[in-house]
Image 1 (cartoon, helix red, strand yellow):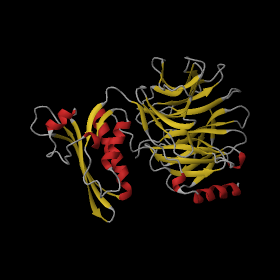
Image 2 (image 1 turned 60 degrees about the vertical axis):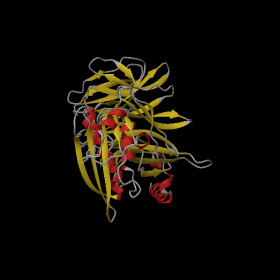
Image 3 (image 1 turned 90 degrees about the vertical axis):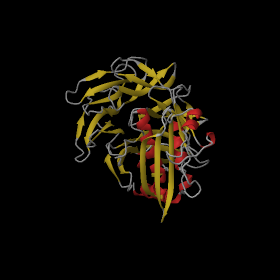
Image 4 (image 1 turned 90 degrees about the horizontal axis):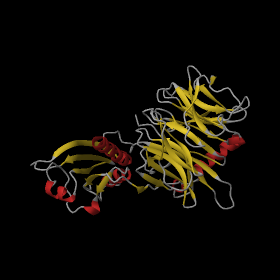
Length: 434
């Protein structure tokens, strides 16, 4: 074990940051009812290390919910409400306008100000819907741009934005003539600022965020044995929480952050357990000889869904934690697996097989209907729901390798996030930043 850990740390130090996979978000299908909005370049452009308005434009455009008029589509460049011509922007085709400034303060500090304008027909003055100022350091510029996008999204869509959230995923690199290398990586939701948490010559899988976004539980096969670890996202400190004989798999945090649901086969067949993280005390949820796996908590913490073959093939079941009662949830099709709740608890994102292809689908728990979201003919897996329920992150096969994708929960928007170096798989979307 010590030799493996030394090798892990050695790789962490040795591999340059630029070698890590960077995801490149590309919108492949957007909604026809996108809201038009103009995002005017913030002044000045050349004296600032991050293009704030460019990041906001990309965020809004890649959400699929906005038709963005940015620098290349504009001929007038106001920086506040008084400078904005209502006639110009109405002629352009939008009444929503974002203007702003970035002022260097010296010492690596900047003041970022922006306004969201609503230009009404027949009004003499533009309505300032949002007006904010922030003082940030150089390395906070990108974060404040995502925050601005979140505010705009919530104002115009009515739902909290997810641009400031993170994603975790596993990157697999297979150098010619050398063993594969696995990296557990965390990045901004748009794929920028990737940061490795763990690099190992052994497989890593099933990352799961804690509810406060400060820790990730995952499975690592160090020493050729599956164990479940919890790692601090900021400090990198980690510890083993489950290393029983056999399977230690599929950890999922309870909504209160005090427990993990997990899969163990220490008594024979894979069964679902709940572990108290502080005491490591186990409570067994399923007690049978079927294959039970992929547990996921309900938002209220009162039940777990899981995948089981007890009906003859993989289907999703629900276990009531207080009573132990188990009920089947999926009936449409011969294969439904890897379920996870949407934040409202009314839907489940899952893998659903259609004519031999594995798709990402949403199950409506009220009606029992299944809606297929992804359109690609390639298989998709590992769905993870955004904290506002608007998107589902997953992995799929494109261009001869594994990549990440996103699809809206109504299926109207699709994006791909191909890694520039290696293959990306097994993603997990973080909760909202506190």
